[in-house]
Amino acid sequence: MLDFTLSEEEELIRETFRRFAADQVAPRAEEIDRAKSVPVDLFRQVGELGLFGMRYPESAGGSDCGVRGYLIALEELARASLSLAALCTMQSLMGTYFIYRSDDPELHEKFLKPAIAGELVGTICITEPEAGSDLGNIATRATKVDAGWQIDGTKTWITSAPIADLFTVFALTGEEKELSVFLVEKGAPGLTVGKTIEKMGLWGSVNSEVAFDGVVIPENHLLGELHGGRAYLTEILTKIRLTTAALAQGPGEAALEYAVQYANERKQFGKPVGKFQALKVKLAEAATELEASRRLMDYATWREAHEMSNMKQASMAKLFASEAAVRACDTASRVLASYGYAMEYPVQRHLRDVRFTLFGGGTSEILDLIIAKEIGL
Image (spheres, rainbow, N blue to C red):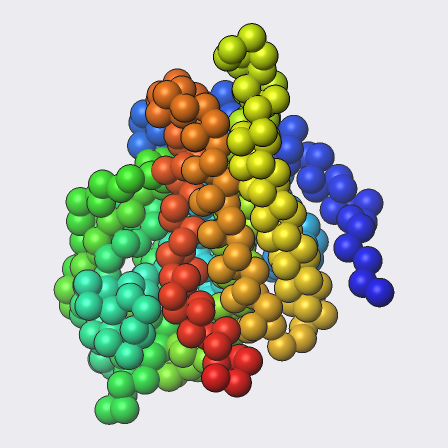
């Protein structure tokens, strides 16, 4: 029988990040929304707590805490501010993974270790105006030149683009139009960051279009093997989906907790609204779905930690967690009624922000198709 009891180290990680989120992040969540950016000092504090290096070995500047400890930390941050948690996810996973994967000591020293310390900001550039779920439609191309590689193309929905120092770029290479991965530094001639995309939620996590117009990079900024991009992305997909599940769980749990507290305090018709059966049922169902979501994540995380085939389980966990969290936040908003619509209460932020998890890491519809394939359909 599998035992998902937290280890001492995992308990310490949860307590550390829960306290940090409650004391330092939650009081500034509204400020993050208003400013539409995450304060640099908060980002640096997360780096000091070691989150950016949890997935990496000590030799790369990390702490190798394991996938579960990493997800616990992200969930605790997401309870307070999904904007901050999303930015930190990009930094600790997609924005640095392929630099680590390159296994180039020079790139590790110059870029990876400073990024793990929170001194440099990294991001990943995959999505294009005509290529979202359909990676086969990517048009950005990298061409071999005397000085190294020349990159031409346009990417969109790039997280942290205006503040990024490092851009991991997926581009076509060769006659067969295979994908390869490249590293572009901020300030490279021909690199242009476009205007910020206005969004429903995640206001503090900024997304922009990024254009590469004849950007030339050194030869060793090819990350990994030539034409290896698609395989490398497949390596990380289950981790991305598990991470997105944890990001969804955070605001789902926070919204439910707030709604229960409100239901016990708010009185109508002479008694707390939580005593009315209709609200009890709604909150009980939300709690049950979030608990089921956690168990799916636990199992998929266990498989990931044991390096087992995990595409089906990670896809199921992400699909269920994101949908359950959106429903929980919606339920919480309904329990608060008009106050759930008021900007002074955190539930509206959770409801706006959590919808990002419906498509981050793969839309629910794409995940349905992946799961169907995994079960033999």
